[in-house]
Length: 96
Ligand SMILES: [Zn+2]
Image (cartoon, rainbow, N blue to C red; front, top):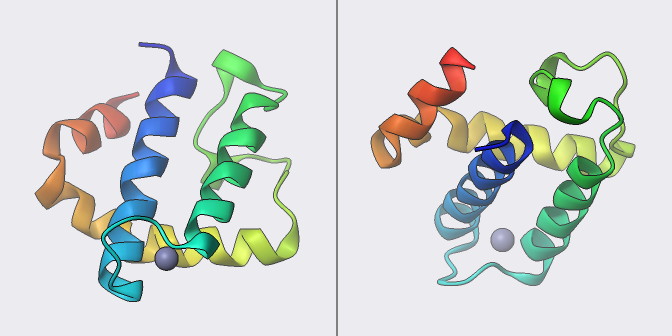
């Protein structure tokens, strides 16, 4: 699977976990939905394409300030939980 697609799937899962636990919704709330489309859009336009590393370690931060803060919160919250929900995804992520 292309790296970008893997990253997208991880992102979707993380935002879903975050929204479910933090906003107590079954489906993504409007705010999280907006954040997700923003993030997916950034990935589509990532200038590193398939050679990209983790967004976290990327030298060029393409997120705007507000969304950068939001996504950091999401990752900080959902990242550690991902291992329980999707261990294989995490392992793949760590190995890539
Ligand atoms: Zn939400």
